[in-house]
Amino acid sequence: MALKHQGSYFLEHPKLKARVELLQRNLRNYTGQDLDPLSYKELHYLEQKIDTALKSIRSRKNQLIHESLAEMQKKERELRNQNNILAEQVKKKLKALTEQEQWEQQNLGQNSSFFMLPQAQPPLQPSILSHPPPTIGGSFQIRGFLNGNKDVEVQTQPITTMPPWMLRIVNERI
Image 1: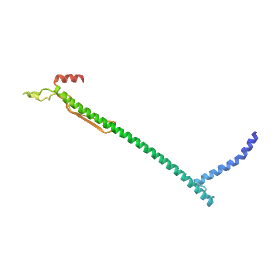
Image 2: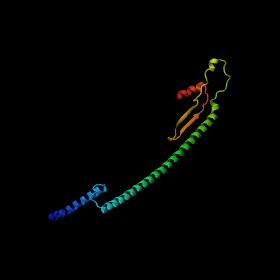
Image 3: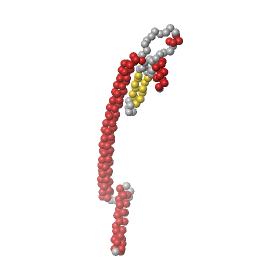
Image 4: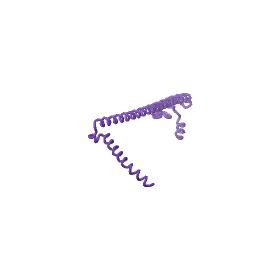
C-alpha cells in the first residue's frame, strides 16, 4: 500500500514542478520581466489579462472609497447632531444664568433696604471723610467656559453698605 502512494507522488511531482515554473514565469511576465521570448499573441493576451486585473482593482478601490465616504458622511451627521445638542445646552445654561442673575438682583433690590444705613450728614472732621464706608463684595466679574464653548461673563454690582459690627461678623465666618 505504501508503494502505491509513492508511485502517485512520483507522477504528481513533475506536474507540480511544471505548474510552479509556469506560475513563476507568468508572475515575471506580469511584472514586466522576461517579455522577449513572448510572441505578439502572447503579449496581447498578457495585456488583456493585466487590463482585466486593473479594472477589477479600480472597481474594488472605488467601492472602498464610496464606503469610506458614506461612513464619513454618517460621522459628520452625528457630529452635527451632537454639536446642535451642545449648543442647545449652552443656550439653556446661559438663559438659566441670566435668569438667576436677574432673580438675585431683584432679591438684592428688595432686601437692600434692610442692610442700608440711613444717610446722615457728613461729619465735619476731615479724618473721618477720608475712609469710604465698608461694602460687601464690590463689583466683580466671573469668567469661564460652559461645555468648552462660548466664553461666559457675569458681572455683579456692589451689594450694599453695612455697619462695621455686621461686617466683622461676616468676615469671621469667611
